[in-house]
Every structure is written in C-alpha cells, then in structure tokens.
Amino acid sequence: MFILGRPFASYHLWSLVAPAVGQERWHCQMKRGFIKARQKDPIVKELLAHATPPQRIGILAQKGVYEFHHRSELLSQPDGVEKVAQLLKLNKSTEEVQQRVIQILKNYHHAPLLEGKHIVQLTRGDEGFPRPISIKQVEYPFRLYAAMDCIFSENGSRLHIIDFKTGKSAFDQRQALVYLVAARYLYPHNYAVASFYNLEHCKKSVLITVSSSQLDTIENQLAQVAQKHQQDLRRYEQKPVNFSKIFPPNPGNHCRYCAFNSICEFSGFKQIGE
Ligand code: SF4
Image 1 (cartoon, rainbow, N blue to C red):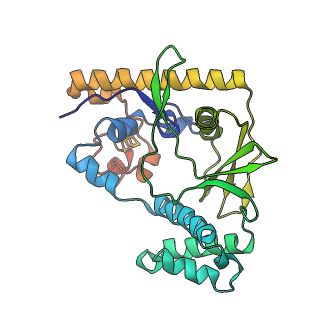
Image 2 (spheres, protein in one colour; image 1 turned 90 degrees about the horizontal axis):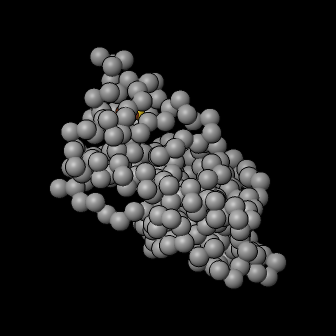
C-alpha cells in the first residue's frame, strides 16, 4: 500500500523533477514515478536493488578515496593501489568495473586531491540516507536530504564541499547548490564553497560560490520541488490508475539506458526490439 510521507527535497529529486541544462530531450517524468512513487512495488524494488555498472563504479571510487585517507600510509606505499583494491574486494566485480576502478585508484594514488587538507567529513559512499535537515523558513516547509562526499576546511573557517564524480556526465551545478544550502544549516558559523572533481578524468570544476540571498532563492526553488512532488504523490495515492498522467513518459532511444525499460509499457527501447 502506498503511504504518503512528509514533503522532502534533495538534489536527486530536483534532477528527477526538472532536467539539467542540455538534458531536456531525454528527461522522463515517469522515471520519477517509478523511483519515488512506486519504489515499493516488488518488481520496481527489485530493479532498484541492483546498482548499474556506472553506479557501482561511483560507489567503489568513493570507497577507494575513503580508504586512502582512512589508512593514509597507503598513499605513500608503492602497492597502495593493490591494497585498496583488495579492501574494496574488487575481484568480485565485473571486468569493466575492475578496470575502471583500478584506473581511478591509480589516478588518485598519483595525485591525491585531499592530501594535506584538513578533512572535516569524508564518507565511504555506502552510508545510505543522511539525516534530513528541517527547512522551515520558506512558504512550504520541507526536509532536505544532502549526502556530501567530502568537506574540508581551508583558510581557517571556510568550508569546501567536494563532490566526486566518475564517468562522462557533465557537472550539474544544482547539486553543489543543494550542498551549500545544507551547509548553511549544518555549519551556520562557516562560509562554504563547493566544487566537483572527476576521479576518472582528474578534472576539477570551477569553484561554486553563492551569496546569502542566492541561497534564499535556491531554498525556495527546493521548496517548490518538494511541493510539486508531494502534490504528484497525493494525486497518485488517490488514483494509482492515473500513474502515466501524473508522471508522463518521454519515450525514445534513451529508454535503452533506463532501468525500467523492462517494465515500462511506453519504452521506446522495447518497441525498437520488437
Ligand atoms: S523506459 Fe523510457 S518512457 Fe519508460 S520510464 Fe524509462 S525513459 Fe521513461
């Protein structure tokens, strides 16, 4: 049975409600429906339980960075990469995942971004949902979820939030903006900045900084995301048969990469294969 929870927002939800710049053609609201409304349907639950290779590479890369700093002697040992690979039990992954993660570990061992930094927080990447932050100062109060990969302090009190990436996807600035909103609540006495770092291509983003009034605007945008999603969930709860009207599909070739193409009656991928 579907049970409506309290309103919430996160970068993930924002990205499911509205596409990133340049991604408009592939954006499908029905994916949000599967992930955030039908996640307890047994078949959807089963599909969501298995990480895709790109997701698995992201998790292992984050764990690798964590291990390098958790056991910092590994950074200076010539066989540090092999030792971290063992800690990650990489040999249990597919060949593709192993190869890409080994390259990521080699990159990081060669140029450890966080070496010498004062690390405030570094997650393993498999901790699950972070504790929500209650945002009440907006017209529509909501809970904010923001799982930050790493925070370090620089120049005394400035906090730098880093999000680690793998693969080829472009950095979506909205993710950094969500972290900066979260930092305002979690670290109210510190000024925070954010950036992305691609562990696979050793590529840094520009530094993302925002003013207090810009943070207010982002908070209001997140409140609108929370409200829109809550309204959609309520409509779905009242009339599940309207699933495809509430979360309209956007079929096309991109369905090939969608985790739900095997159960989605609108999948462009299935139609091509038939
Ligand atoms: S298979 Fe295509 S239409 Fe169906 S949810 Fe996925 S992207 Fe949307």
